[in-house]
Length: 408
Ligand SMILES: *Cc1c(COP(=O)(O)O)cnc(C)c1O
Image (cartoon, rainbow, N blue to C red):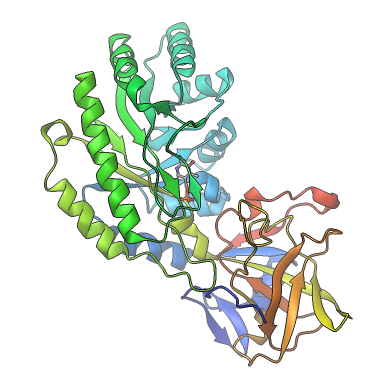
């Protein structure tokens, strides 16, 4: 048997069924009109942000990285919890505007922003985090033509990266951000051309579970911001210090000690160089805020055996849960936390693999896990489905189409 990842806290059993926000899985499926279904818990989102705020210094503003989960009701709920939103495309700008989020609270990073996207962001009053000199030139030209003052920050490509992070976003050659040594000249140019200067964005990595690695990166980030601002001879109104706090997905993963991270950051803030004294600091997080608040529910449509192995074949699959199938940036496939939702808490009775309905061997949601005996009609639950699930999976593959989503 292969181990399963740790089921996040906040889920209970009612009448032997998985309950999400106090509702039984079968009741949620009935309400949604069927499976496959992503369910996100409002309470778990609220509790997560509250715990993070309690751990971090009050001076630190909190942004939500929309790409982790752009579902409208989730965004609307987050709008009441966080200070701002980070987007990565014109499509995400339209999504946040559609749910009524004030673009003044939005910053837009990401390589390859088209002129139409830059124009939409300038007109909306969102902050643009510039990824290259070429982009800086295009933005200034568009703003001049529109007769508007663009809000501009520079995304810095730091020389360091976040150790142990699942996705490295800094260190060496990268399509993201502007290399450190070229940043001061561009900062001076933006200011001299009359832009509304918004400071730096320094994002060194994602999905790290080590508090020490995060603390070390934050220290380096603040040092770098101070050094570049001094070299440029400019004040720093804002500094987005990135995020990178990960969540436990796999057997043996432990949650990040955010109290330790917050205490270290408070220490750094108490000891800032002059050039950063007046700076507003921002942390941006996606999966840490929403990942563990979501569950993916699918129904078993077939139970079969092949060469002595049991397969629970569901109506879901990698087209909604690419990451759980191990095909979204993982090197070695390991099991996400998963369970039989309609037999939640029952003892393990057999080894079984939960697979999807796609005709590819990649479509495996749990590999040789230990489960209670399940049959056709039972629901399976894949946890940690609140981030990079519905929106980061190839929903159109094999003509399947998107899953249902609901916030409860
Ligand atoms: C993807 C991304 C994030 C969010 O990463 P998480 O691991 O979901 O927290 C934040 N900032 C930037 C610039 C990103 O590209």
